[in-house]
Length: 138
Image 1 (spheres, rainbow, N blue to C red):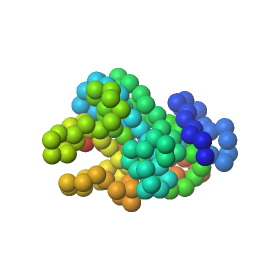
Image 2: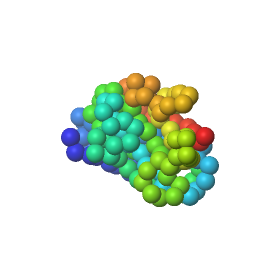
Image 3: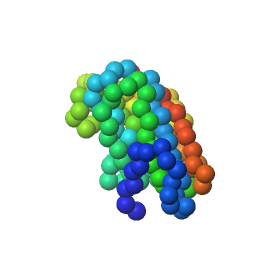
Image 4: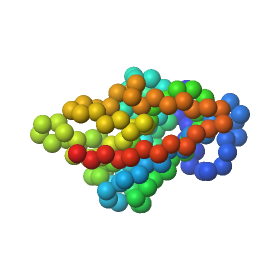
């Protein structure tokens, strides 16, 4: 399935697709970019752009950013990375702790590991859905 992205707030024009809106809140700065992906399985979650059903990159210009896309109704998980230095990857310190923020749907807070796809799953109904996820920094 090709990647689809829709930055408008208009309803979907394809009745087979549902509108998903994700608001990313609690960004600590306006530096860099936000990298956002939606996945339909654990394969590639949370960071493979090639395996994402939707992948978007956007400059951070506000404390809250909103992403909209159209996808078939179903089960998904989404992730976002606040890439403050624009190098297109999650930076970590010497012991592997992230030095940039990340967020996933359902806002799980696992300790000492990345969030799992199973913790981030949500249902996208035919009428669409809006979710809010909180950026976490360590």
